Amino acid sequence: MDVVDVLFVIGRVLAVFVLLLVVTILNVWLERKILADMQNRVGPDRAGPWGILQTVADGLKLFFKEQITPRKVEYGLYVLAPFLAVIPAFLMFMVVPFGRPITIGGREVPLQGADLNIGLLFILAMSSIAVYAVVLAGWSSGSKYPLLGGVRATAQAISYEAAMGIAMVSVVMFSATTGPDGTLSLAAIVERQAGTYDMTIPFLQWADFIPRWNLWPQFVAFVIFLIAIVAETNRAPFDLVEAEQELVGGFHTEYSGMRFAMYFLAEYVNIFSMSAICATLFLGGWTGPTFDGQIPALFSALLPFVWFLIKTYAIIFLFFWIRATLPRMRYDQLMQLGWKRLIPGALIWLMVSTVVIAFRQFGPPWS
Amino acid sequence: MGVLSEFFKGLRVTGRVLVDTVTGDGLVTTKYPEEFRQKPQRFHGRHVLNRYPDGMEKCIGCELCAGACPARCIYVRGADNPPDEPVAPGERFGYVYEINMLRCIFCGLCVEACPTEAITMSSLFEMSTWNREDAIYTKDELLMRPDGSVPHMFPDDPLARHKELETADGWLRATAPSGVAAYEGVQGWQGTPGRANWDPEPDQEARDA
Image 1 (spheres, rainbow over the protein chains, first blue to last red):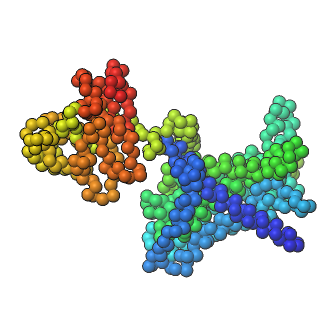
Image 2: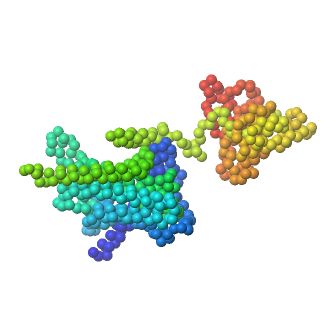
Image 3: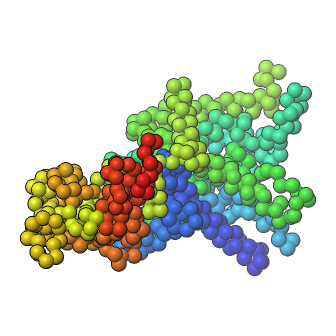
């Protein structure tokens, strides 16, 4: 660990930070554009080519707006809450590998903020802390609607985090069977999904292009995880926390200017992070054909990043598509889906995959 | 699994609309300042005071329009024509003619009430102003120019589009001093001021395009 290593770490962290900011700017614009297209509209097209700078303009506007602080707020928590939303959102992405490790000057640089061996636990911890931002914002605003939004956020996040965690457990268990040991490191989980299935059954040999993603053996976990992350990021149809029609703006009603922009930023960073985690766990992350030796080395190094972005954006597009399609759920429906469908479903799937894994490793119990 | 099939049905609807919009078929909104929707042929836009072919004003100051107006937004004061250079044929002319566009409901009853067809409606609809006084159109803005075009409320405004005012109404131009004097009185297809570029109907000819 010398100076160069430290510089590389700082560079990686900065790269992740800039990547998240840029994709957030693009995602806000992309969401408005896709929603517009799904509603026969044009969408933002004034700022820059195709309106791509719309988010920059909005951000500048929010930056120069007055930050109104209502009289009844709990000042300390009120100021702290937006930071509690932004910081975990950025930290969550730090453990996600977004490219194949590259070698610069004899040093191997993993394209990842930090390769924690408890990566998945870290993600769950960060997404739990992000709930505090909403709850504290609702409580410290000293107003009814944010409080209702905060209370809803608590219940919603807790119930869906359970389903998300259980879905993660079955993925971790499955990826333990494809490698030497069990791991929570996202880098290891991605590397174990590399390559394609080698079909031994004769009449299925044409299908040998199918990648060894966790998606196929863990499809049920994928669906549960997908629903859970939509709820976890408070997106439609689970956006009861900020239901505009009932709660004005929900937990961020009393926030304005840059403090509101931080919640906005956190929401979109969370969407990208969660989609990236979903792509990492189920769609093989950055793995994909890199054509080593056939094309220049620079392209081979960049291609994994491109695969990662394509997979992530496929899920983000699904987010937007669902938002354009589904109406907001009622609160009791939300709770019913969480506790009566997703968590039992995830538990049953966990048992099923446990039994299958044990069967494949140890053989039938009667033998 | 009724819920799931409904879910995918919904996704299919939005997905189809997305494809339609991207390929350009389904788009229902237009980029307004650049693109215009076609307005109906009998669109009730802002009013225009017309002239006879010899340059005389058609308005005779009878105040029938003001009487017909349900919103009471028209103020007319007639005056006797100066004998040496008359403004309108006959005894009287519209000395003051004001329409408050903030009160006007664009019903067109003034047009029906007018005995000399002095007041008609154009297809112009962009009438926003910075203050209430500017919304009161006086004779300076209402009366058509001798060439049949319509004056602009704010000629110096950088956003003023003078080009659309040049397309004078076919009826106005036929009766304007510089217009088609041999107007045959056939109600054919007529262009109007304002961007309402309708093609002629199948059995009409573009006589006054």
